[in-house]
Image (cartoon, rainbow, N blue to C red; front, side, top):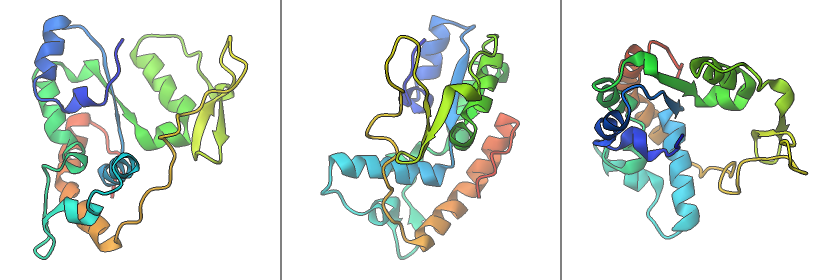
Length: 193
């Protein structure tokens, strides 16, 4: 088992993973690409506070509204193009998509689907989670062999930067056809606006 967010978006990774194992089961967590981009930017500015504003980085030309789809926080959210690359090497049946929003609102339900996909008995249930109001995320209750609960690290759950609503709408409009294509490839509608 290995975990990294970069594998899904790195161009040569599907071929490399396929060369390693044609039978591997792949799990990808996706979330609304606009929220994901803002979250990504929030994490970047926490480490590099002197970078330009989200708005100035998201557009090649703000006046014309031309979006810079190669800017990493936006490019990562072009799920359809990344998924197409994976589907060239693996059947859809070997790729499980976790709904990132539901992972927060119903972690046991989403993890139940993961357990099913992996052919595992459903042992992770609602009783294993509690909602941490400070983080705004569900956390694991005290894991076996531990004296304290496990929650996401300090880089998760921080307040996002405020983005101009007009910029958010332009990004939603930009992503709409990409999301529709992704829904087709995924065989599921994630309901992103």
